[in-house]
Length: 186
Image 1 (cartoon, rainbow, N blue to C red):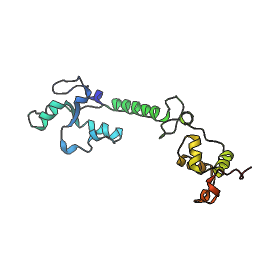
Image 2: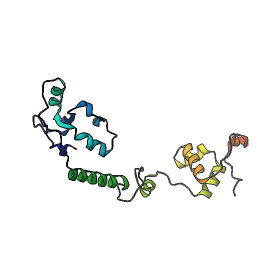
Image 3: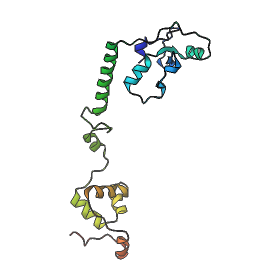
């Protein structure tokens, strides 16, 4: 956005650090949004910039202290062509940024990575449904989790995802001496 205003303070021409520059509303009554807090659409921001001047932090402070007069400084001008160019560039960058994974594949809008990268990142492969169902009825979830090197809640999530019914509360205590059951699913 600083390129719209010339990338320098309109009063002292400072332009070394973009972090030391900010927009000052010439007429505070015209101010609709505070740009420093973000969360506004690009169109609102562009409309708001045309009510401002670009100043460095020092000049901004002096304006608010009444030490500088800004009535002769022109507001930022934004031609329709420049506005459309900025909007096109913004939407193109946003589209590229939101729909492409770091590997280059397409991803969902709010996902961090694509499905292939998620599968690569998974530390433990899920067993097939039939095998997991057999294991869940042979061993308690906490012991099964240790075998896989994951948490017992991960085993529960796997079962939920596959639609596998797990043994109820107290099932393993009812079985004799809490040993591994081998008589089921043979």
